[in-house]
Amino acid sequence: VQLVESGGGLVQAGGSLRLSCAASGSTSSINAMGWYRQAPGKQRELVASITSGDFSTNYADSVKGRFTISRDNAKNTMYLQMYSLKPEDTAVYYCNADYGYGPISFSSWGQGTQVTVSS
Image 1 (cartoon, rainbow, N blue to C red):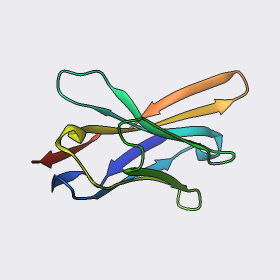
Image 2 (cartoon, rainbow, N blue to C red):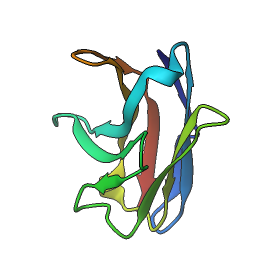
Image 3 (spheres, helix red, strand yellow):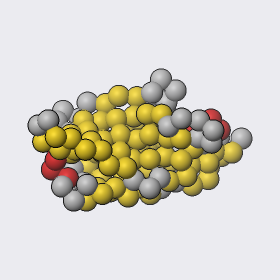
């Protein structure tokens, strides 16, 4: 599975952005997808995730109520809609997919897209 992110950029605090992650390859084997972010000097952290089966979602406390993760399986694309952005949301955002069958699983990462929120 290959992943390509897009949609990052520079936005003022309070603004919004939508990130996209296009998947290709063995997309039918994807079990879950997620967005992670890494700010300078900090560890990479999970922002939000979504499963393939029932599309159940999970969010970091810091983004609950402001970010929405979704998937369009017909387009093999995952989205992260971000509202009410804060300077502390500034980071490189990475798309991730966990895929495989049964006990054999793999993880794929995109190249990352920069999100910068100015105060």
